[in-house]
Length: 340
Image (cartoon, rainbow, N blue to C red; front, side, top):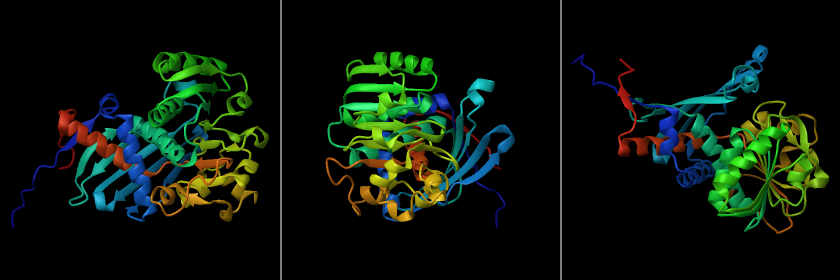
């Protein structure tokens, strides 16, 4: 028996390359596919595993997944360090991903997954809004003007085509003002008015879609601000103790999560669940069940709908496959023999 082994080469892709390879319209399709496969029980996706670096106010998550009938598998490693920007001039969230060949276990690609994380998180909100928001939303509110706000905006404008008004709020007013200027340059043809607002309430009242993308540990959005018919995408709560919504909003809404295990542990519902302000029965569906047609989405015009996103490994997996396929087609990246 020969001891000679075939050379195993792995495609290396940098963040800049991945950014050029990914198109939001395609990412929306990948995210919708990911939700559908989860809803139909056709994906392996253990809950995220966390390491907590408490003395540095940070954490690390590993996210393995396998979409069985598409034969796509990946493992993402991602950090969240909220003090990075202030202390080191670095991003809060950084990630790398290994795309695996399920047949052999070969690492097909090793890539920066920071942009993948941004894009698929924006994509998750847009797909949830497709099923849960009222048709033809006019006013979009975004609370939290960090990196994620950009891909939330890109995904939602890709999904809906245009908005009459976009309102931006951040606890640091210079961030919301700078983002408003940036959005006016990028979206002047597709948004009537883009403005930075002084209070969180101003971003919420009368919005058709609201996105919360902060690292808050106390409610920012109060129940009395939320009008009938509003859809809310809760993006920021992604670790135990984080919370952006008044639990009363969750209680009266059609409440949709992406994954029970993750959401109950670290999503928007984790704090109210632990305090007894919310019960498992208050959760109406997982988004995958709605996309797969197993449960209804929005049921009436006046219904308040809430999507709590924790981020699914299968979203990263299928988005990374898009980047890999585009890289192979366009001959982008560099092959290297990492594995002996």
